Image (cartoon, rainbow, N blue to C red; front, side, top):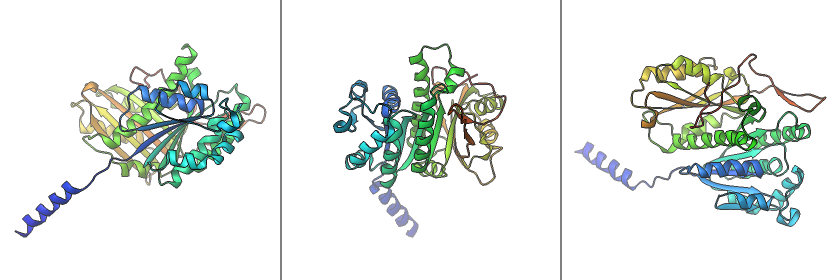
Length: 357
């Protein structure tokens, strides 16, 4: 009788428990950041709130997102910052109260930004700081300029350091890889590849948290990995469920920023496949991706069945806590990232946004 009473009480408490899904916010800072959020909105991402912030009113008006904020209207008159991050940072400081209200209260905040310009570079670190002060986990997805944009490279480096200090995790995506991956695409479509990748990261992490799976990843898991901190990178792969070794090799060779993942402090792995996926196959993929990581690394993974992926297996892996050995060339101001030598560039993404060879 005592056990029955205990179970009844437990069931009543479960029914009365007011569960709230984690609030996930995506903030686009500056022109490139707004473009990424606009694409995410077009993808129909669920369980995500979106807002965009820019000093350029004309560009802001073109973004199809309900929540918009014109920064520094009294300073820039809606014409932008002219590539000066100090103007955007000063405007953000003057409007800190409004920005705090705009980005506060989320459990997980993604910040999308293109570094090297004025608004995004100056604004993103301020937004990141305000979001963290409100108690949110903050993950920035930042694109870096092309090598030929020499002045912007130096501006991007300064912004990168400020952003690194203000975030829990910083995922860097190098625009230079677009020249290797999709050199024949029209410019607009080429940039859409990067926007698609950013959107896929947000969409997949959100699905990890909110959609049930065979092996679930909850918000606490995601939080723990992102809080391992530092620079991060994202890897994608897709192949037949019978080609797990090939999938691992392709995924590890596919980062949009060449880095050595063997020293990663954490990994967040999401596998999606049809109902024919075997436990041994999923284990082989996870083992292959994490085999070179330190023993103390925090690895969290989830597996979700998706009927649309019948016969194939898709994997997204975010590796965190990376030490990226960056050097600045004095002669041209180019950011150089040393990674594994001899790696072939990844192939263009397929229709689903996953990189494939």
